[in-house]
Image (cartoon, rainbow, N blue to C red):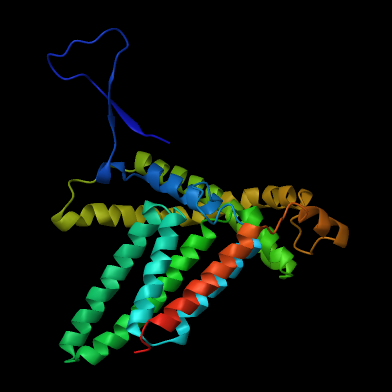
Amino acid sequence: MTTVDVTAPPAGATSGAGSTTTRRRSGLDRMSVEWVKLELMRVAYATRGGFLARRDPRAVLGWYVLCALAPWFTYSTPILLALFVLALGCALAARIGPLLLGLFTLGLVGQAAYVLVLVLVLGGDTTALDGLLQISLKLGAVSLASMAAFVSLDPEKLSDGLQAMRAPAVLGFAISYGYRMVPLLIDEFHDIVDGHRLRGAPHRGHGFLGRRTIGRIGRIAVQAFYPLFLNTAQRTRTTVEAMETRGFTSAGPSAAGRRLRLAHLRWTVGDTLLIVATAATIAAVYTLLPPR
């Protein structure tokens, strides 16, 4: 989806009837509530594609288990760094989107700065930094693998994959329901915040370091939570009934219903190659790189 701003033609410029000048948004100019909402929808419903989106959900979950467990069997910084780079490459190939990448980068940089300052203040040495770096690489690799896997699975694929792996029916039902409530919560929150902003008096300036603006945003966010859940609860029964008519029952489907629902799942050669290539790559990293 391309977002454009319609602006008036510059002074002195001539234009025909109905002509407009458009400017494509880029960089920080793209940041808006609507853009964040669309990014969350793309994350929740796996609309970006990627190399994992075409695979069977059971293969994606198996791939995630391998990538999530691999960093916890070593304390070697070179091995952890290689696994982190591989997870980053998989996350970029899975097209996880700029919002998640930006939040992940911000958290990683903030954690590194915090740890560095803490070590320097407490008089630590390079040994302490190496240990903290290992933990950061482990958590970073697992986080990237998690984002790559779960942004590639829409609610129905994830629920079907868990059901095919004999997970409890209530787990798949809860995940499907939670995914379907995401757009409702976001839309309700957006509408309520807009209503508060329209009814409230504008603040007098931003204040020192924007304290008035930050305070007003915080008050609106807190005041929006009660009507948010009240309005959303009115739609809960309709959502649950609609899901149950499609076979998403918390009690679990019958054997015939389960076979019918999972009939579309196909384990292909590509799924097998994904698991084998991932296991072989992890084994090669452990074998070729030094243990310490």
